[in-house]
Length: 168
Image (cartoon, rainbow, N blue to C red):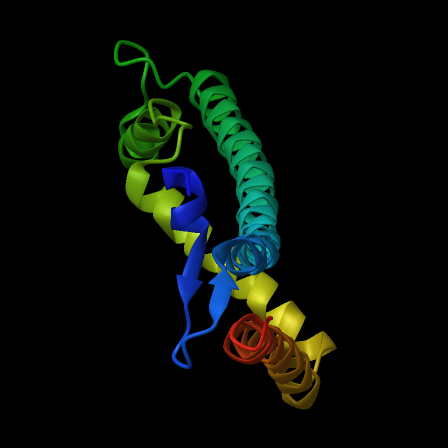
């Protein structure tokens, strides 16, 4: 027999010849099934992260607008009350200094504020999710998904053990 055909046929535990081709087809089907499950789970996770990221960007934009408005208001108050150091009234010194500090603020959030924004957005989304769906529903979905995955993999394993080894 040619060498490539020898590698395809092997003896099982009872001395019968078994084709490894059937074995490899089952392996490929199982690999594709598990890959589809993994891709589906990865899609859900990435979609969730994308949604949270979009919400964070929106809140970041709103915060930037609020800060810009607040800074503009401070500039307006500073100029309206003649707070320039040469024309400043002594009674307004403390308030003018506060407006000066306010109008020189940076409206971009720092990395710490960005992290706090992420955490608060994620917490808000998870709170909304848990209010809308019960623990019982989540557990039923999780258990049914896990049972489907386990049952399918056990079925593939049983096929390998029973049908491939009992092939003529």
